[in-house]
Length: 108
Image 1 (cartoon, rainbow, N blue to C red):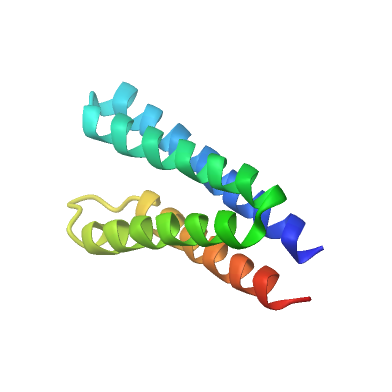
Image 2 (cartoon, helix red, strand yellow):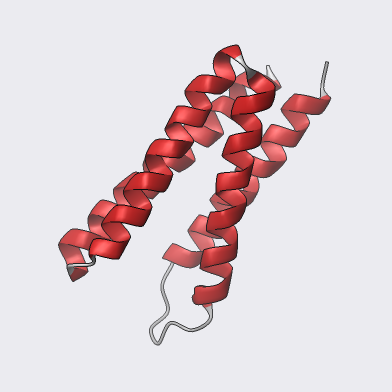
């Protein structure tokens, strides 16, 4: 059961990242947001799909990608001039992927 939850959390975080990249592009014209959000979102969705058949590999990849996103948003979250809900949401989502993945992999 935890495996299914971890896969869903990773896939959901991938969709949020992908949509966030699109929003950043259309709202601010940010190609960097489009590329980074799109690439990380697709990689997370791919990792979630991989985790269905190969849980260790898929959830490990999803956790590594999520940790990279957490580090990126933790670094930039405090430097934004205006308060935004984006950084806390991306940090929280990334940590949720890591925690769900660890619990799924440690539970028999």
